[in-house]
Image 1 (cartoon, rainbow, N blue to C red):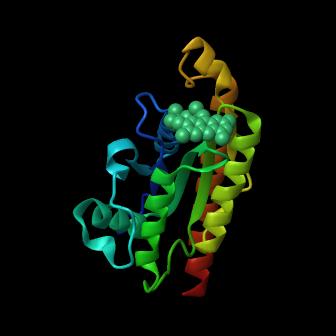
Image 2: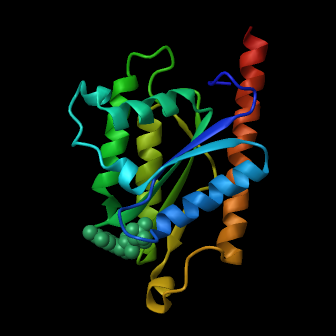
Image 3: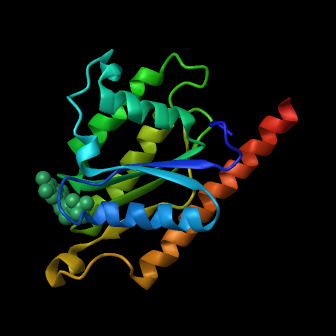
Length: 196
Ligand SMILES: Cc1cc2nc3c(=O)[nH]c(=O)nc-3n(C[C@H](O)[C@H](O)[C@H](O)COP(=O)(O)O)c2cc1C
């Protein structure tokens, strides 16, 4: 385990500054499911992602330092972004840019950590492309995207003002994602134990 406890810690980063952020709703559901399966969780969303635009060496501002320590301690992560003009939102990407501060760690960036990815948008095109973009960022940071990711078109919810969660189809996807994250955590733990 990356942290001191034997109970895995999963850290989620994402959402938006919009009240009732759809992305945050899905992230919270993933964390709820992970807790039900026995993990500890921590969420960085909304106001906690209001960080100065990243500049190299900027990791010591209090909010950023807390986020970075949580990522260091995490056994796995969940990333979630709304699609903004076809890409990852600036708020989420800026938070991810701070992970540059982990470059010289013994386990650099997201090395050895499974990462579940969630994307929401007002259409399928941006939802799918943002899911793909998040996975590319995870690869760049040496993390392991889970095979299953969630790309969600929330347009029908925006039209009706019905919350995104809980919805049976999305709940099913959340269950798969959370299960795969903990499968990876267990598998990586076994590999580390064998290497000792
Ligand atoms: C600045 C901005 C840009 C957006 N660009 C797109 C887009 O290119 N394609 C799309 O389908 N939805 C777009 N959307 C809609 C959001 O992706 C969608 O409503 C998302 O689910 C909002 O997530 P949130 O509730 O977590 O803020 C945009 C929204 C905003 C505010």
